[in-house]
Length: 119
Image (cartoon, rainbow, N blue to C red; front, top):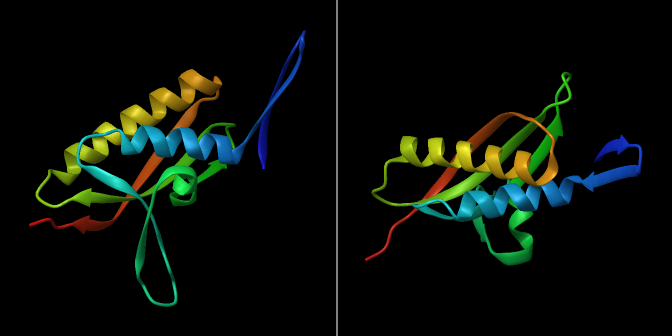
């Protein structure tokens, strides 16, 4: 699905993959976020995503009131305050998507799928 807006000069169409990539990049730039992840339903294993596949850990839908609903699946660094990280992600993703696209974001759901433990 794509979002479309029109003005006197023509139409602008933004694909969901572009919105997902903007949201994924904004989320991974927040302190404590290791990266975007996907979960295999059959095994329950989590795959950490980098680069071009970062949009796969994000889903974007449109609500009834024409606002965006963004779901993020992330991996965090062990020992960080998860509530603080999620608040920062919500603010950054909402700001970046709204600023870059002009579409309003209704809600951002952050799903913490895993924590990375380092030695």
